[in-house]
Length: 135
Image (cartoon, rainbow, N blue to C red; front, top):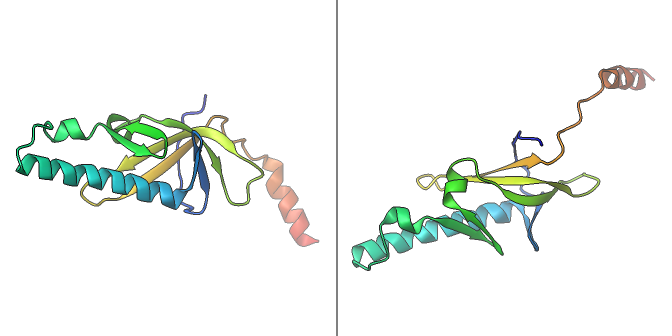
C-alpha cells in the first residue's frame, strides 16, 4: 500500500466521496463552512451557557456530503476513501483523501494518496523525448 500524500492543487479536479461528487474547490469550501459553523455555534453556546459541552467536544467531525470525517483525522493522519478524476487523466484513481484545516486562517488543504504507487518514469523516456524533439 502506498502512503505518500500529494497536495490537490487543481481546484477543477473532481473527487468522489461515497456517492457524492465534488470539484476540489467545492470540497474545500464545504470543509471551511463546516468548521467555521461549528466554531460559531460553540462560541454562541458557550456565551449563552448552553450545556453543549466545551470547545473540544463540539469539534468531533466535519461533514462533506454523505461522508463524515472525524476532526482527529483532519488534525492528524486520518483519511477517507475516495476517487479522484484529474483534468487530462484517463479515468478515476482510487485512494485516500486527507483534509487539514486551520481554524485561525480558515485555510483548508486537501491531499491525496493513490492506492497504487506512482509508476517511476523510465530512464529511457528522457532519451525518447530528446530524439522526438530533434526530429
